[in-house]
Length: 354
Image 1: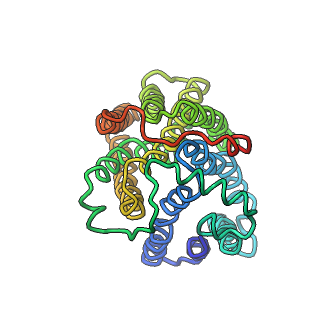
Image 2: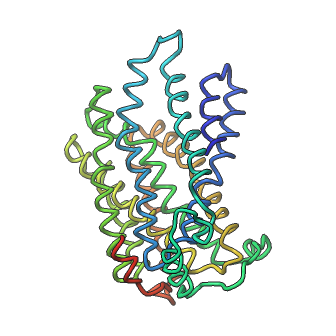
């Protein structure tokens, strides 16, 4: 987080294309380990019976950024432009990069590797967590060393990577890059209105994600909850260019797409720990995330190319929605033998604190 924030601040000082390419590469390198690292970290603290709910609270940060990020970025770009001779985009990188640096130092001083090392936990609280984790179906008594060969030769890792690439990051690219353009196509031209309307789907999406993940934990079922999220994302994406012709309709289908995206993302990351052996999780999580970024490089270019050549989003979003459907199909096929993925039984003491 600290390096991530510092590199983001550094992007405010780029002078040309080469310095931009260099800092963007460094930013990607710093960012790459953060997300899978957090997901792995959560598996050390929370049993699988609570993992969807806990993961959803972490994923919620994405939605919160969608709510506050658009309007705040718009305000910074419009109100701080020219201050001290800086452009608005320079202020955006500076103010956006400082919080991760501060949060990184706070996390380093506050967070412990595992419950056993947490100074802020009482002894009985550590015992509660230890007992819950020991009951995990995939629990290991002895520490294990990550195996590069084992992770790369694990078929499940590659199938999860494919599903993640097709379902999560394909939808995420539409959500993160094309929502303002879709709203503009629906008739929204005012920059302030555009920022506010772009935030609304994320607010509804948070509620839908929290409800779906709680339901998933209560019923100890992941497979069809993931499929539900993917289906919503696919349906919303497909309807946007073909059915939505006004601002209200566009906003509705954007909300459906964003809700499906958040549900599918949170449910997805509660699945791998139950399918992968302990020695494959650290590298496996990182590999899944890295493979997913392939679509982050290709999908924006693909959508932009098709929109420019064909004059609309119809073909582009239809193609991406097909990718999302294929990703859901991959997940359903690979988990067909484990319709109810292995999770531990809920622990009553933790339930009272959730």
